[in-house]
Figure 1: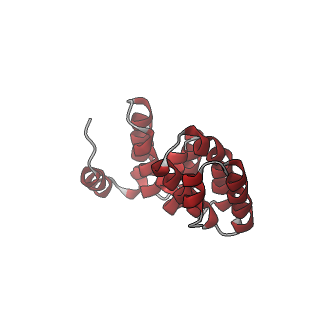
Figure 2: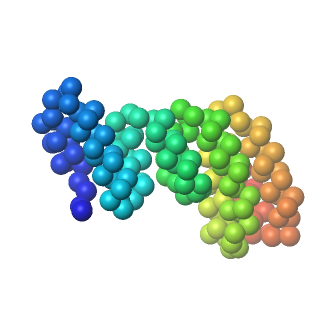
Length: 147
């Protein structure tokens, strides 16, 4: 099955407003059961402004990559949930690989965490802990200097 948003928009325009909820439920059920990526399901939730459902799906993935993919759309709406999820995943992710590119990726995630309003000091504590835990990794420490 190919997916193009223009067809989605055409269908939505063709269906009466009072019937759209039922049609949307059918679409969501099909996307969820037809083996399509969960990303498409999240994208539909976001398009329909179903932010709670989108957040639930992102959190269920327990993936730092999913958090990053939807950070711009969800982190400001759900700062606590987003920060807690990052906090849970950042240490294992930071330790998962070595190398400057990976360290740069970790720093980019940390910048996202620092940018979540209300959690700046907690983010700084995480950064300091990573500095201490990785003090024997000069490339990592070098990348952390940008924070």
